[in-house]
Every structure is written in structure tokens, then in C-alpha cells.
Length: 327
Image 1 (cartoon, helix red, strand yellow):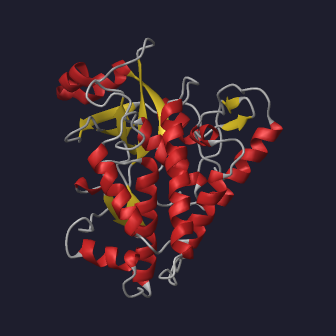
Image 2 (cartoon, rainbow, N blue to C red):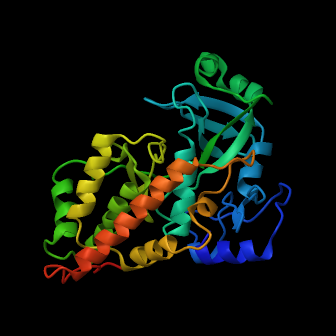
């Protein structure tokens, strides 16, 4: 949901509505024309619970046909539904706790920053625990060992519609690292398709610093489709306790960056000055509780201020004549 749409919705609503279907964007839909499926509006007194998005509701009502574990270091399930839909599901688990919230928070933040086509859609859903366990078949032991259903028996987690034709170019290895870092730190300006790619990496560096994602460059977390680069696997972001070494590397990449996306920087400034605050952007989960803890949101705000300050300092530096060359 764009910040303007969020503000307008907040002004027109006072009480939290009952759950129900709502509009849903896709990863390729312009952010200015849509509303985030599960991102709520907000009022001056706090978040307003918006109806569950139509897409999330469809998955919750669609009978499960099968489930298969596909995670390596975390619990991730590939789900197939009776309708033919396929999705990845990151449940509340012993191993991962509530890390799934990072997926949803990253998507909602991406929508607010105008880069909804860079982060795969992720919705908070609740699936029946018994149906999920049955769908795992011979893999039900994983459910018993790891998955943590709520008191209702439902399992809350992040559902991510399956991304078809997703590839993983070696952006996280040499010679690619040297190449895209050169584009961002003042080397020769890229042209054509490389310029678009450089702009995407500039956004990625800023986005990962802002979200404190410790897991981006661990391998296979930068995907590509026909529409461009995707920032995938965001459950390593927005954690209550930062990973100091990983965040130090995020900051080093940011401080070395001297070229930025004009449109993304404009959205960052708008977000910094957004009167409803970041809590309104991140919203609530399916039970109406804040998606992110207040301390986590405050950390995002602090990093947002530092991020904008770095861009502005670079912009005024004598050697920054090439600042913001990317659209």
C-alpha cells in the first residue's frame, strides 16, 4: 500500500472492521494502483485492523493436497492446494520462532517504498494444523518436531505464492560482486540493461540495511525472473536482536554506495516523514497483534534516519557528481 493510500484510508476509518476479503496486488502491479493485501490502515491512536486480503483468504479456504519440506536451515514447506495453487509456507516453528514475520514485513515495507515488484508477496495466514500435518504424509514427523500451532489448532505463518521461472544468477560471487559494487561506488556508469541492474542493486543495499537482513549474501537469496531481480528469503530481517557482524557488513556496503535510485530515495524521505509512523506500515498479524515488536519498529526508524542522512551527505560531497543517476 502506498503511503498516500494508507493515510487516506486512515482518515476515512475510525473503527477496526471485521475480517473479510479485500483487494490484492501482485508482484508486478504498480504500487500506486494497489493496496497491500494484508497491510492495515492506521489511525492517530494506532493500527486499524484491515480485512484479510482476498488472496490470503483464498489460500486459507483452499483444501491442501500435499506438503513437502524444502527448507535447509529453516522450516519451509511447499504446499499444493486443490485449486492447483502452489505456495511456500513458513510456519511458526521451534527452529524459526516467528521469523516468518520478516517475510511479511519486508513485503509491506516494499509496497510502501514503491518496490513491490522487488519483494515477493507474503501474507500472514492461518492454516488448520491437522490438515497441514496430514498433507505432509510421511513427513509428518517434521510437523510434530518443529511446527507450533496456536491454541485454536491453526498454524500461523507467512504464505508466499510460488514464483515460477525463478533463477539464481551468481550475483553473490565474483566476478559479479566486483562488477556491481563498482557501479555503485563511483566506477564507470553502466548503460542499458546494466543501468537497470545497477539501480536494483543500489536499492537492495539500502533495503537490506534498513531491514537489518543478516542472511542476504549467504547464497541463493537474490533471484531473477523475466521482470528483474527479486529480493527473496527475507525471514532473516527485522529480528529482535541484530546480528552484529552481518549488520556491520550491511552498513559497510551502504556507506560505500554513492549512487542511488532517485525514486527510491524519494520514497525513503516520504516514509521518514510519514505522520502515521512505521507501525502503520507494518500493521498487524491475523490475530490483530502488531506484526513487529515496538522495539523492532524503532530500530527500523533509527536506520531509516541514518540511511537518508547518508544519501544527503553523499549528495553534498564534492566527489558525488554522479549521485542518484538511476531512476
